[in-house]
Image (cartoon, rainbow, N blue to C red; front, side, top):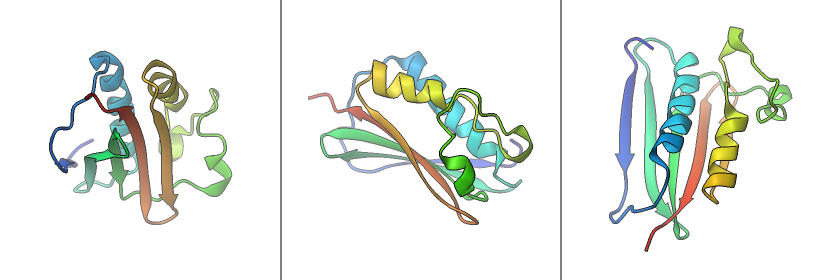
Length: 126
């Protein structure tokens, strides 16, 4: 991941939540590494943090080639690794960490030729 800018874009204030830092670090690392695989040198990955519907939503956005439709259904299956065209590694474990350990949600939006955003939520702490 050379010459790639990672920009963190928090919106709003009081973005508080309770989570296992190692777990969430692992999820973020996975998502950023995956985004890095499809980001050209000199490109940029955006990380958004926003309060939404009583939760904290974190988004990792790349401007890569998008996820082909035929692959999308397999993204959260254990056996998928497509190293040659961008490695969506560890997404199943990321989903488990967010949805089972933290009662959040993890999903993605993608547009072929435009890029992909992975979002996850963590319940907000009051």
